[in-house]
Length: 320
Image 1: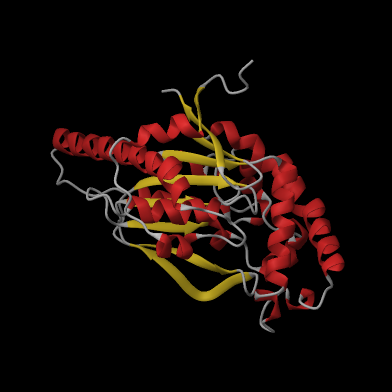
Image 2 (image 1 turned 90 degrees about the horizontal axis):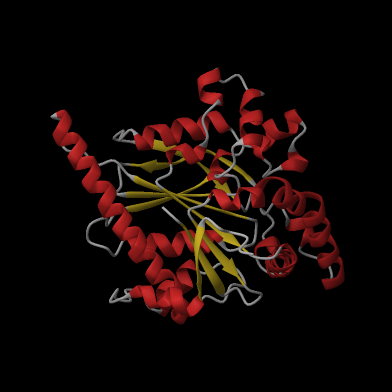
């Protein structure tokens, strides 16, 4: 029995045929800029998986732009540019950041939406000082560790067509929000919002109600502002191994910087590093995936299912 009855299902080859005549506008140097650590993204996969996806999204954006023009004409308003918002969800280490960067690059090459901005919800985590005050440092990445009211205000302002909207910036080097630094979004054609919890509703609402936000805001969710949503998936045990592999790579690179929050791990042996990485996964990332992230998978309009080699094996597109 099909476990996703509300979706059209495609294997790698059949999805690739939907590319039609969409031209490849990237080269190997572009891929080097968007690849995540230890990921094996090849041009062949861009052609077979991500070009058809960019074609689909281009069609959706064009339809949305036409609808906005029709509405403005009906209301007698001056035509305005309201960004098309795409949400991308998935586990730590599953490759959603690479997917987001690649789509940003591909979508910006279409002439009807050349300006594509990317915002990650890491910037909406509470600062470490606030997480420590709330006793949440050990649950960083769980729904309650995010400043949900601030994220909702950001999305509402983007979707209302506000001329300039600002988002906070997160540093993976310092493992904290960067004080005084912001991303400025100036009514682009498309905004991609990437994060662990962007498709959640239940736990996120509970987290919001524990804040001082007014009741109407607590009843809204980030996905209310999305025009399209995507979930990057893989078996949990595979993602755990990718997380361990990434941790080992970072131990030999980024963690060696004395300014890194994780500098204390730089001198671990291979065996010690694997033990620490699996401990972090089992205490934080694994439970968050099981309890909060993966249950939102079928709220996405499109699901990319990866194999052990990071290659997308199956694509599921929600039926309209």
